[in-house]
Length: 397
Ligand code: PMP
Ligand code: GLU
Image 1 (cartoon, protein in one colour):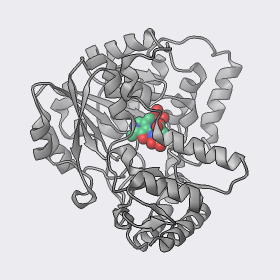
Image 2 (image 1 turned 90 degrees about the vertical axis):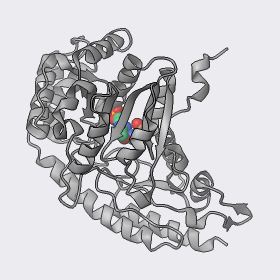
Image 3 (image 1 turned 180 degrees about the horizontal axis):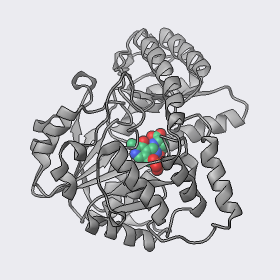
């Protein structure tokens, strides 16, 4: 069958693919340590599950309004007010099947064929492919560990052309864990304000920050940006609810309306009972986040220390999310047996084959000198996996 031309650039999500491969190997009885996980390893808190059970029992099992229930929109609006000092009306909010779906709808809603969208690298794997699916051109700005994996206002200014339609900001970042301070956000806002460029601020890791870092939205820092910004967030990471598929976006009325119309002609509403559970997540007790954070923090510091002790590796200390993104280019050019490790794909493949450790190659995020290791796995497995990586690297010649 002829596949549509727009699929030319589209590949399966590499992060999901690595996790699936590690799971398949485990199912075959192979002892793999999977650092691919893009989801918290904790159970969804009980009060959230109970809300879904109650919704089921009450027969809340039918279509809801396409863009989400008023109940959940109220909870999202209250969350924005409480956590970000942002005021959104329900008509400026869309509930989707995950933040990924909100982002997809947004790109479809605002990008025309040939439009440019600025994406800082290392980037989350899905942004460029979503841009291609909308017929747009991803314009990648490079950042490295030396610059803290953050773009400068000068870099953004230099990337803007008359075709620029959107700019993607992901703080804290997947895959680097880098997060922008309020001052850094202000400097970026100064470049973007008044340009008509839509700032897509993906804040899905907002709650997962360490060392007392205060995570701020670029729109909170510069409220005048609200008219040209779309804030995207969700319950997946904060409440360990990846499988429930609820995310949301808030932004200008016309953008939200267009996104809702796309949803209306594609998926309809997100799952009714998952929406009820998300109301409980957003309105209920928030201490479950702290419990998760403490475990993540312990793993983060342990992992960075261990990675930095491996010869040829150097690891940036992430401010947020649950990923480490070490620069491993120090081992490139070396050999594992007769195979030369010539980049992150080779290293990830050799680690899986030889050391039985699954990591995501940095190439998937536009950063071939790095690999991504998630710390959303137990400390015991982190220790075991790092022992394997360390031993593997020692065998390289
Ligand atoms: N943005 C980023 C940066 C992510 O890492 C993820 C993780 N999947 C998402 C968006 C989408 O999350 P979800 O669709 O589960 O809400
Ligand atoms: N965002 C997570 C990750 O980067 C989940 C996988 C995905 O949605 O691609 O691993």
